[in-house]
Length: 351
Image (cartoon, rainbow, N blue to C red; front, side, top):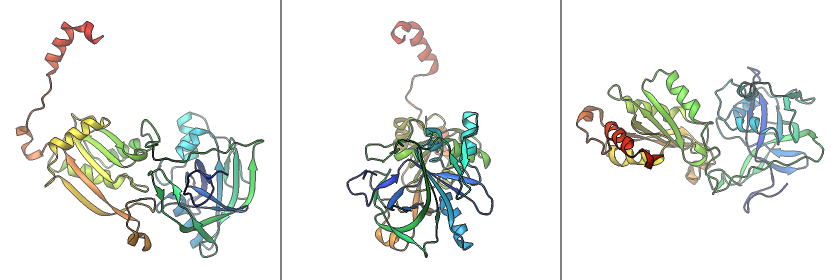
């Protein structure tokens, strides 16, 4: 295995990995992308940030006095690998979601050791068991993370004891090491926006006109466009967006609500609303106590030592104030009638 970054704490076989676990109570299978460092020929790290589904599942096994069965797939069909990075709701399996999206099931085999499904297209797969940290855990990290920093330092983390290895002939190591110059994972944030939008509508919030997520890996700054319908509407949307967009370091750290004449995917348009409609004295709130992860570079050392992986989130109301909206200065833009008149007169210039 290569060492991907200068200051990595080890050789990481898992950068674009799909880690597969099963909930011991509900029996559904989760696929997630969690970094994996090689310790020795039979031991891999099993890093998973607080709140991640694999983290919750393995704790259930440990609380029952069991080792957690684990499959790690290194290099498989890109669609499944992409879906594994999406924070699907609890109970929704990535194998099923991938099959639904592409219109046919994912080919798998049953792992002879763990009984877990193994992607049939994988280049390299390991089966193993993760013991409780009291039995075996080892120093892991740092690793050059998607935040653009070396994430979490050196920490003692759970491991997987490898019991079997499978591979194709001449297997290819799939590497997806993040870099500072790699700010986004997708040109369209399909891994955050659809779920935030659907959750906002599911709780019954009216007037949602658009949703986008900007920032590193399309995770950090949520922007929701609303047609204001009642007093406090914008603040309600901001609070819900901050709560619903979660799942790891920096995720949803900033929640911005704009009027329905603002395109939430156009950052320049959003900044214009921030500059001209947000009163810093009355329109910005800081709410503490949200879950982040050790990968958050802004977390102070004293909180890391206490394993207090929480952060504040910033709620910004960049809408016209509800109580004097009608008196707010009109936007300096040509009317639709004038725009049509100009276009019709000089149509050849706009061809």
